[in-house]
Structures are given as C-alpha cells and as structure tokens.
Image (tube, rainbow, N blue to C red; front, side):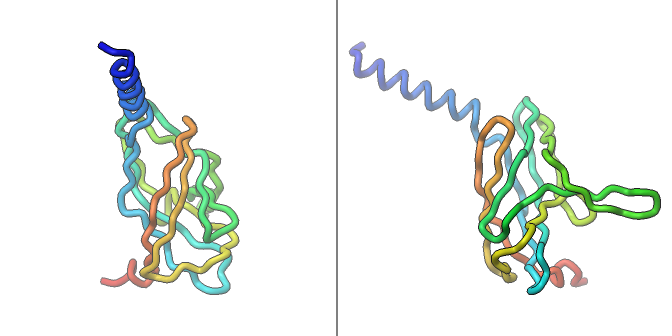
Length: 149
C-alpha cells in the first residue's frame, strides 16, 4: 500500500474515532423558550436531554445572544415554600434522560438584551465538562399556549 493510501486510512480512522469519542451522544427534545414579556428581566427555557453514552456527562455552561447570562436553575422546597436556586452544573447520567420543566430544573435567561416573541427561534450554545460545545435552536412559545385546554 502506498504512503498516500496509508495517510488517507489513518486520517479516516482518526475522524471515525473522534466521532465515536465525541459523537452526538447527547440528544435534546422539544427545546422551548417562553416568550419574554417586555419589562421582565428574564425568561425560562425547557427541554428533555438524553445521554446515550456509557459515561456520565455534565452541562457546565450555556449562553445565548438574547441575554447577558444563561443559568441552570432548579426549584427546591424550603419548608412550605418553593424556592428557585442556581445550579452550577447539571449531571447527565450515562444512558439516561433528564427533563428541564416548569417547577423543576430549567434554563434562566437573565438580563434580557432581546425580547424573543412567540414563533421566533433562539440559538443556545451549551458546553459540557468534556469541553464539547453544541448549539441548539429553541422555539419560542407564549406562556398562554401552555395553559390552553
């Protein structure tokens, strides 16, 4: 086999190995952001996320052009009161799913710089503990849509 063919085989193997090691093992379903209400400094985002790899992963950062910061938040019970708290990282257990939902784990878009309207799209970039970055396009929906019966 010629040196040129060996280089092509080696490069192909490296690309394949890269895709296996850092492939698309994180799958997000139904990414939605609540349409922002003018005057409100923040809004929330929701989705389900599945980690189909055999290794735990952590979400450690999120960012978007619609706000100064994007934070991971959760609700906890403090006696009879529910309280929202910032979470620094989110465990994505191997071969499992987590759900970001109203009243539980969710994204908070803090200090909005743009007020997304229902029907628009917003890109959010996530970073994992392994250094992988991926961008997801969220649909913007009105909170009124959530409460129609």
